[in-house]
Image (cartoon, rainbow, N blue to C red; front, top):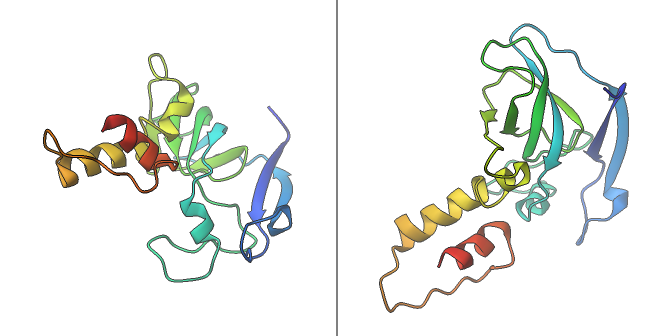
Amino acid sequence: MSETNKQWLLASRPKGVPTEANFRLEESPVPKPAEGQVLVRHHFMSLDPYMRGRMDDAKSYAVAQKLDEVMGGGTVGEVIESRNADFAVGQMVVGAGGWQQYSLSDGRDLRKIDTSKVPASAWLGSVGMPGVTAWHGLNRIIEPKKGETIVVSAASGAVGSVVGQLA
């Protein structure tokens, strides 16, 4: 295991397109889990369009990202140390570990995943939150009927691209 945890922090609020100057890479010791916690080593992290809105300190559907803290985001990783009876070492999980190599969790924000049939990275996309959102929106909200035309205004995004494929 690496002796340091690389973390990407939001250092300043972007004006327009975010640049490297809006972020700061820091290294800190890999945290040790307390009783009831697990240590997750991230293999994949999300970089989704909604995150740009979180970088502004403005009212939105998503909470603004705090400055000088690890940039939030979805992650897929492996439990490498566990002091939580619900999670075994080696278990793959999806959660909100943020833009860092390692994170601690009490398990409430983690979901166990099976990567034997679906690649780990897909749990942040087509079979994860974007895919579930796309499926639910299409099948439970839009409820398309035979002969109707589906128009997806943001088919290049995480959710819209799945809606387009499902439609």
